[in-house]
Length: 111
Image (tube, rainbow, N blue to C red; front, side, top):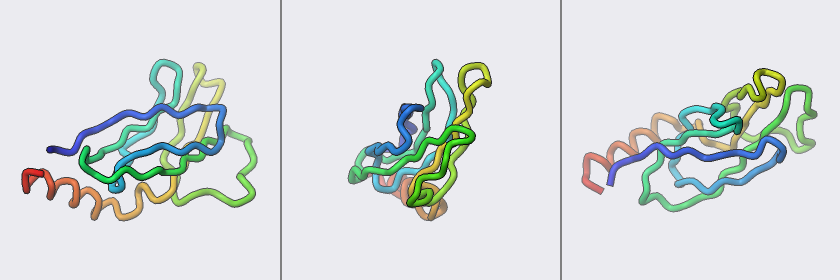
């Protein structure tokens, strides 16, 4: 089986959200589609599922008292520019080179 790109919708009104992705998932981008925020991730369908924490903050929102998780993923502009959110996640971009190599190695081995 080959790595694939999947889309995951986020709720712009919930600060802390958990989404189940593969354990080696790599977030490729964030963006708006049909007025809703989304993230696109490269995953291998055979990976063990793992929940990842996403933080969604509007411009001017306070930072959660326990801080932000691992990395900033992107900014999404909604409602014709009148609402802007910023998306953070746990360790999704850490070890990007290793994760990408791991996904592609499976492709080469026919898994």
